[in-house]
Length: 485
Image 1 (cartoon, rainbow, N blue to C red):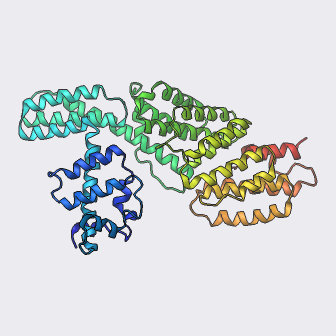
Image 2: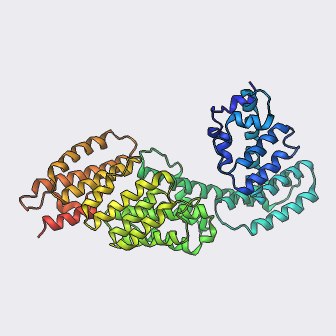
Image 3: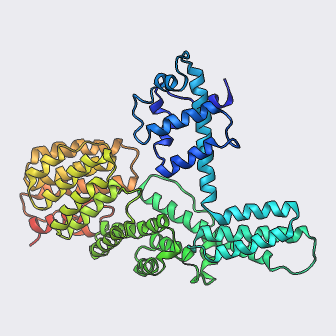
C-alpha cells in the first residue's frame, strides 16, 4: 500500500469520502481554479487523476450519489476495463492531495504581505540585495495600506522587521540599525495582543463550561498594560476592555468603553474578529441580565439589532441556534412580541437545516408562553427533540413554568424529580449552569410549600441576590404576584 493510501482511508461509498466532502465546499471559481492546478504538469503528470477531477467537477455541486458510485466513475473513466478498487483508492488519494495543495496555495497567496516576506527571505539567502530592498519597500507600502490594525498586523510587521534585521546582520556591519528595535517592539505588541486574546477566550469558556484554564502571565501582562499607553492600538485595547468586563463585571465603564471602541474602530478588525468582539459584549450583557440587572436588557437588545443589521451574527450566511434563541428571549422579555415573531420566522431559514425544526418550535413555544397561551406553548414543546443539552434544560424549565402557572401540581412535582436527576447526571454542563437550574428548582419548591398560606417563603426576599439563578425575572414576577402584598 502506498503512503497516500495509508494516510487517507476511503469509505466504500465515494460520497462519504474526504475528497467529495472537500469538493462540496468549493465555489464555482474554486472548482475552475483547482482544475487549472490539477491540469498543470508542474503539479500533476498523471492523466488519470486529471480525468477523475474532470468527471467529478461535472458532478458538482450536488455530487449525485448515483453519478459518483465507484463502479460508475471507473466505467466512465476506463470503459470496459475491469473494476479495480485499489486503483480507485490511489487516484482519489492523489487527487485529494492535489486539492489540499491548491487550498494551501490559495490561502498563502491571499496574503500578499506574507508572500513578500517569504520572497525576502529567499533573496536574503541568495545575497540579492537590490532585489531585497525593492521588495522590502514594496512590503512596507503594503503594510501601510493593510486594512486592519490587529494581531495579524503586528505579526506581519514583526516578521518584516525581523527579516530586515537578519539581512543587516548578514552583512556584518557594526552600527546602529533601527530594525532591531522595530522587530522587538512589534513582537511585544504581537505577544501582548495574543495573550490578551487568549485570556479573554479562556475566561469566557470558564464561565460556560467545566474548564480548568490557567491564565499564565496575567499579572505581568496587566502590569505592563497599565504602565503604557496603547490608545493608538484598538486591536489591543479592545481585548483589554473585554478582559476587564470579565474580571470586574460591576465596573460598567469597561463595557461602555468597549461598545464605543467597536463602533468607532470597526474598520480596525476583520469581519470575523469584529463578530467575536461583539460576542464578548453581548455575553457581558447576558451575564448582567441573568444576575437580575434588567437595565442591561435594552443594551443587549440594542447590540443584537446592531449586529443583525451589519450581518455580523451570520457566518457563511447562517446564524447559530443558540444566538437565535437568545435574541428571541430578549425581545420577549421587553414585550416586543411582534418583532420577536417576525424574527423567529424570518431568520429560521438562516439556521443550519438540522436545527431549524427544533429552534422554530422551541421559540414559538416561548412566544406563546409570554402571551399566556400555555396550551399552544406545550404543543410546540412536544415537538422539540432534545438534540442540544441546553435546549433540553430550557424545555424542561419552561414546562415547569407552565405547570406552575396552570397549577398542575402533580405533573410539576413529577417533572421536578426527574429534572433533578437529569441535572446531576449530566457532566457536559458547567457547575455554575447546573447550579442555576438547581436554584430555580429550589425556589419553585419553596413557592409550592407556601402557596396555600399566602405567606412569603423564607429566603425569597433574597431572590435578587441568589446566584446563579435561571429565569430570575419570572421568579420575581411570581413572587410579587403570589406572595407579596
